[in-house]
Length: 455
Image: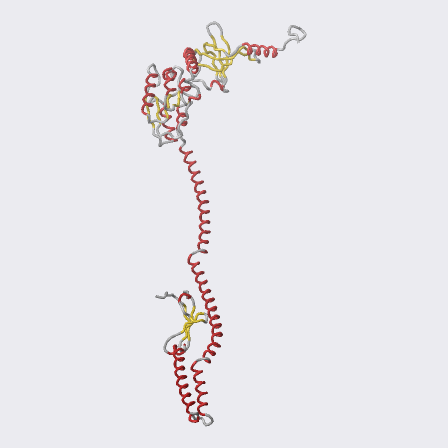
C-alpha cells in the first residue's frame, strides 16, 4: 500500500500503531527529571500524571506492579527522577511515558555515587559469590548491630523470641543514620568480631530514603563487612531498598524480620520434626523389640529342648536302659555259665578222690571177706599186703582229700571264677566286671569295683 496515494489512505489506528512502533524502537529506557502535576490514583491502583518543566510537559503512567515498590508517596508539585520508556497511547494518539522507576529528585546524585562505588567494589571481587559463607544451622549466640531504639531491633527480637527463644542475643548499639553513623557502625562490627562469642551477626536498620540509608553505602563499612571473620547478614530497609552492605554480606535479608527468620531455626518446625522422628524411633524400636522377642522365644524353646536337666533326664533314662540291658545280658551269661558248670560239677563230684576212695574201700572190703566176707580168709602175706595197701590208700585218700578244692572250701576258703575259669591273678580283672564266687555251700556273683595290684 502506498501511504502517499489518495486511493489507499492510512487508517488512524494504523498510523498510531506505526508511530508507537517507531517511538518505542527509537528510544531506550531514559531518565527524566521534572515536576509532578495532575496526579490521579484510580481504583485500579495505577498512577496517571503529567511530568513538566518550565517550558513543556508530557503525560505519564506508572502501573500498579511498579508503583507498589515506591518508597515515598508521590504528590503534585514534587520534583522526581523517573526511568521510563517512550510510547504512544494508540486509542487517543497521545504521546506519553511509561514509568518503570521513580524516586525523589534529590536522590539523583546519591544514586550516581552509589552506582559508581558499586561498580568499583564489584570489579575488585568484593561481592563475588564464592566468598559467601553459609549461616550456622543452630547458632549459640546472635549479635545484632543496629539502633537500640529503632523498629528493626524490635522486629528482630520478636521473631527470635517466637522461633528460637533459647538462643541468646547480644546487641551492639550504634547510630544508623547521620554523618557519624558509618564509623560507629564499623566500630560496633569490630567489637562484635573481636569478642568471638557470636556465631552470626545481623547489621541493618528499618526503611527510609536513599539518603537515610546512606550510612550502609560507606566504602570503609562495606569493606569491613566483607572482611568480617563472622558470617554477616545485611538487613537494611524494606524489600525494595538496596545498600552496598547487602552485596558485601554473606546473606542479604529483605527486612530485619526476614533476617531473624534466616538466622534462627524454627523451633516449632524442629519440635514437629522431633515428634516425627520420635514416632519413627518408637516404631523402629517396637519392630526391633518384636523381632528380639521372637528370637528370644525361639532361643527359650531351644534352651528348653537342650536344657541340662532335660539332657540329664535323658541320660538317666539311657543309663537305666543300659543297666537293664546289662542285667539281662549278665543273667543270660550266668544262665549259660550255669548250664555249662552243672555237668562239670557232676563230673567233678563223680571224680572226687573221696568217692574213689570209698569205691576202692568197698572193693577191698569185698576182697578181704572172700566168699564169707572176712579178711581172715586171706593168706598171711596177702593180709599184710592188704593192710599195708589199706593204710597207704587211707593215707593217699587223706592227702587227696586235703588237696581237694572241696576240702579247701570246707575249711572256709572260696573259689572265684571268671567266665567259668578259676581266677589266678587280678591282672585280668577290670572294674565293673562280674565274677562268680563259690563257697563250700552255694555260690554268689559280685561286680568288681576296685582292683588292687599285688604287693
